[in-house]
Length: 209
Ligand code: DX5
Ligand code: ZN
Image 1 (cartoon, rainbow, N blue to C red):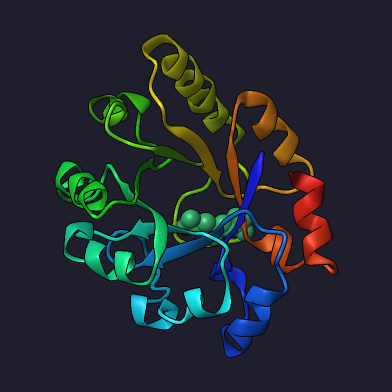
Image 2 (cartoon, rainbow, N blue to C red; image 1 turned 135 degrees about the horizontal axis):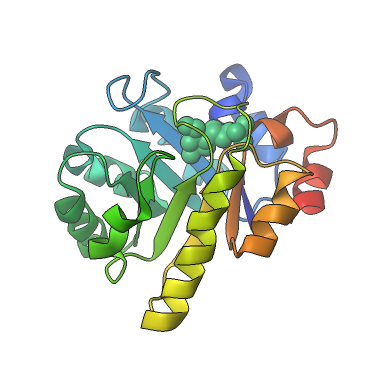
């Protein structure tokens, strides 16, 4: 299982040092929040524009914003390898098409209360499905284990229909919940507070891989 630390919990006063402190990451997870789609505002693309100058770790951008279509180009510009939008946001299909037309991987995500069926029209179009195991908006929340049923179903669907998305989980991943996620079929796990609150961050990343 690959690990994508979320920089939402990082100290933005020393962002460069924070990024350099998690060199064992497989991806950097960037939680973009607009204060409309989720009740929190995090950071815009200008804050992230220097990332590719300080790290070669691929960027896994998670757009928790109401109108992602308007912003796709900005997150392509900063060097995202993956851009994930939410099925509950506006124009999900147009956004996915825009991301793929830019030559990068497109992901789709769903909130805990959103049924997996809502993703069915998109599964043959995306490279990644992001299952939220917390209500999006904040780091440090508790893992919602019932969301693993969506992971198991996504794994079954992928095998049955030969889809080629990877399965990512996001929220409340730590030393206890990571093995459950892995066992359910998760390919890539986001970990924010568990990594950034650890004494040895790279050791924490390796421990949950
Ligand atoms: C929540 C974000 C998550 C969160 C993960 O809206 O999408 O990526 O930052 O943080 P932890 O791992 O602390 O739950
Ligand atoms: Zn996220």
